[in-house]
Image (tube, rainbow, N blue to C red):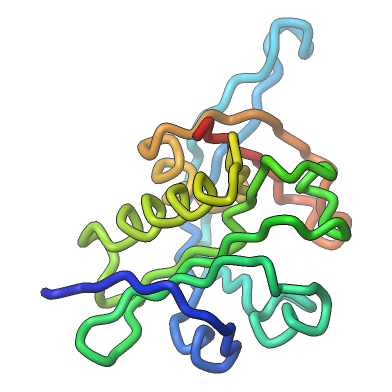
Length: 191
């Protein structure tokens, strides 16, 4: 498979969204306070029964179609993984966007806003290549760190980010009012 990673000058939400962000939730990371929380938090993997499909694009306001309406994406990085002319993956890096709280007002911090690989091409190294290109893009912008948000129900993503050298920097069990069973995980990668 001759996959190429290309940086796009403009974001086309409809084209980007042709790659589904959906994944099967059949397990989740469970928080376990140690000594009532004084000793920190432990994580364990537990099964989810019944399993279900989670699709971030179907969450109100999270679809790629809504991003250009909500944020100025002119300083963002848009990457595509292509096989011939077919898109098989993509990544979006947010940077220098004051209205995004997760950027903490820093110009030396980028956020891996989104990364996705077509279901038929997952586990073939495309995500790792997109991640590598995203980190290089952030370095070229002068960033010293990249932040990634995911949830405890996305165990494959948590394993992926850990495998890419990211460290779990924050856990927020109260981040999602509309999804009280989900826990926000924030990962950091020093660039």
